[in-house]
Amino acid sequence: MSLLSVQAFLATHAPDLNVLVTEESSATVPLAAAAHNVEPEQIAKTICLRAGA
Image: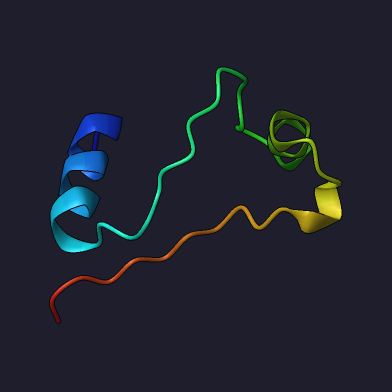
């Protein structure tokens, strides 16, 4: 899934949610923490979405 397709889906199905996009890599916990200016302990690197059912 591309970023644009995720943004389009959320705009239609969950317009109250925002997708945060950074220029920095978030491939690892330390990189994601740095990109969002938080401590690594504040990062959850797993996201699980279920639509429909």
